[in-house]
Amino acid sequence: MTAPCPTFGFLVDFEFRPGLGGDGRHAFWTEWRAFLDHHALYSERSDAGAAPQTLVVMGDGAQATESDRVSTRRWLATRSELSAWSVGGLVDVKQLA
Image (cartoon, rainbow, N blue to C red; front, side, top):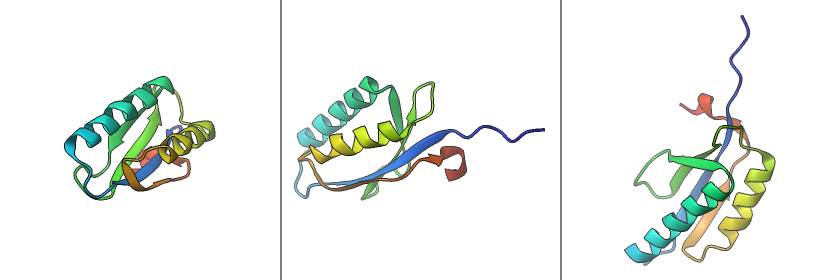
């Protein structure tokens, strides 16, 4: 019997800028979903409501790739709603549970 194939994804941690209101957060989440859709990715919150936010990003029907990580880093760098963010390395997301 062989081991199951890994499901590669990566963690994204971020904090919203202090004082960012509900409209700013809503705009961020709307644009985040659009970014993910454009790159055939999706995310799940690892610890909803916590600060910083932690998201697990995975490919929609495929593995997340190094290119996906780079695109995510570039996108996050443009977001004025955030005070801090980081993108982790590719990991087998099944091992995170």
